[in-house]
Image (cartoon, rainbow, N blue to C red; front, side, top):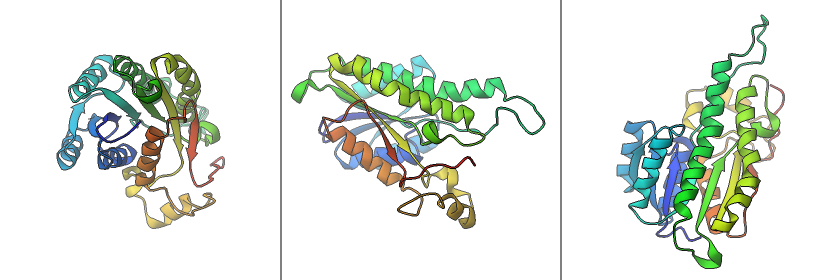
Length: 253
């Protein structure tokens, strides 16, 4: 799949990993639709890059369907990247014995897992109606998991479960969508220098890197965007989850 001229849709695309992905794909010649709930950031980035913004909540079927329709107006939808996600810390039982809030667990699963599936199914439906390219390929879907899917820490039970679900969807989705010529790949990032970490002190940021093997630093969101571009352009890569983490294996806490 060639990026140049391809129509791409990126959820969570207004900032962080999603924003870096939009920048990289546009730099490669793609026509991008930024999907996000943050209208101010999304419209600003779209104006800067010559992209299009579509406001949507990934858990809302109608809103995502409308965003996909916006992408289709630019041409055949070829690439969908899911970067939208949340993460709240809470233990199964807190120190007083109080159980994890059930609604909070459902919310994290709803956004990170159900939202990712919602984007996947609707993007795939649009891609399946496009004309096939070389080797019958019609599209590429890239999902975002986390190293927490494998190394969930204390307090990450909801987040780890949601991201493990994204990993678990990868191979069956690739198998389901093979007849339509659609590849599915998941990225599992480690600790990246996103706006979420921007408010932390240098001391805390340095502590976060202590378990990263090499290079001994936070990941650069641009590296995430570069991996997405590589996945799009590597046609034999399918049904796999790739850790992007500097060989990090998360400790219990």
